[in-house]
Each structure stands twice: as C-alpha cells, then as structure tokens.
Length: 178
Image (cartoon, rainbow, N blue to C red; front, side, top):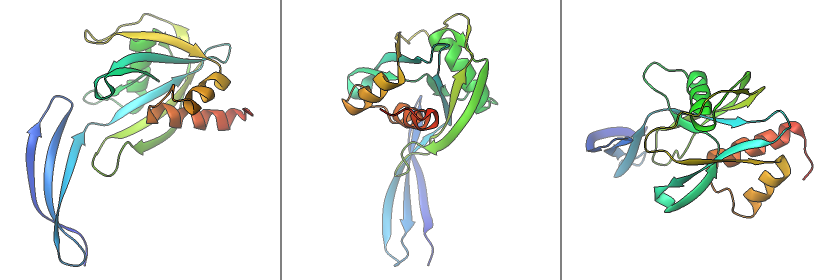
C-alpha cells in the first residue's frame, strides 16, 4: 500500500516560507501527520580567488543568534535560473562577478521537513565589481586557504551545511592533503 495524502492544510504563510500540515496514510493503513516547510529553490557559490583563497561572508543568522561563516547564497527570484542566482548573489555579497561558474551539485537542505532545493557552484576567474547588499544584510568578507577552511569545519568555525558540503567537494577535487 503506497503512502497517500489524505488532507493538506496551509498553517502559516510567511516571508521566507509557508508551513503545510499533511495527514497521510502509512503503508500499514495508519494515519500520521507531517509538517512541511514550503521553501523556494536557492543557489550558493564557493568563490575561489586568483591566489587559490576561498572567499566567505560572515553574517548574522537569527536561528543561531550568532554570526556564521558561509558561502554567498540566496533564493532564486521569479524566472531566475540557479546559475543566474549564484552569479547575482556573488556580486551582491562580495562584489565580484564569476569569469567561470561551474555547477557542482544540487541537494535538498533538510528532506525530513523542507522542500528547499539548493544548487551549488564554484566561481573562478573572479572579476572585480561592486557589492550590492540587501538593505537588511550586513556582511564581512573573509578569505581563507583551503587548509584553513578545512580546519574551520573541524573546529566548529564553519557550521553551515551548504558551506561544509561545497568545501568538502572542492577539497576533494583539488586533492589537497590536509
């Protein structure tokens, strides 16, 4: 017997996401409730500078009640592709355009409750431009060598999943022995 949605209710309409409560039938016939955060797709980009340094932004993340070090990222605007979004976010947050933008992977950020799909890129051959932050966005730009970035993952200096995934992928690709 397959899973079946018996009832679906929107419980909250928010700025960033909507919350839906579904009642489903389980394979054994019982019913269960499932909460779903309906979230728009997003894109993120790991910028690699001319000298091999990795560029990050440090910004306040309210769920943590703290600052977090992460790669530039944002939600796709209407009709925007992940590539265009990644390039836009790169320029907005660190003031650089990608000379080369390579998709590395897409993933769901938390499949247990959220529909957000994130596409991640590596940007190289960066071209200086102008930072253009959102009015409620305050970021500090930081650069680290790949080895330093890996150490930050290990010591809790980077706690963001998209940033960790992009870094580990990149470190594997460049075959750095750390």
